Image (cartoon, rainbow, N blue to C red; front, side, top):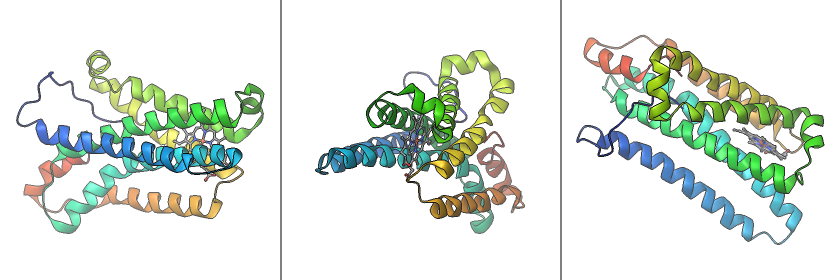
Length: 225
Ligand code: HEM
């Protein structure tokens, strides 16, 4: 959930590429949800199906969040490695779409896990630390989602909006806690993925390559996320 610039109803010629990358992200998130659902229907055992849907939807939300957090350093690394300029506006649009997708996927996952897998047992959520961490992460993602809409953004103004969207790192840390404590989560894989994410984040400190690239690079590497 990142830079959300208020846009008119009909996209101008310059806005079309941004819209296209955003719709690619939304389309991929929708396709992933449908595939998860289809696989779920093919599983014969109810208990296995419930756990599969909970885990798979959780990983879909987690992947979208990890991509959101790594979009800026990856674009910086790309510009640094290839010295080719990239469109900061498209990176921003993609990052925003990924952030929005991660919040919706997390909402689906949380709702499914709570209602079906946990039988809507609030006592379980208040008792198990991994569920409390998941709930807290979901709340943060939903706050970010609500601030991603143009109307809200106009009122919030960019000065407040940037620090607010750094909350996505807090959401990332809470998801990390959720996964470290979740009974079925593959802990080594989780630690490996977090180490990879931290390595990617280091790309933020890469020097800028050239003046021509710099302007667009700076735009692409907006420090907000
Ligand atoms: C109300 C909020 C949430 C609830 C009630 C919840 C509940 C659950 C439950 C019951 C499981 C299955 C237990 C297990 O796999 O060990 C699970 C797994 C998972 N959750 Fe959540 N969760 C919530 C929020 C989130 C959020 C916000 C994310 C990420 C954005 C997330 C990511 C995951 C992942 C990746 C797994 C799979 C772990 C595995 O491989 O087993 N969850 N969650």
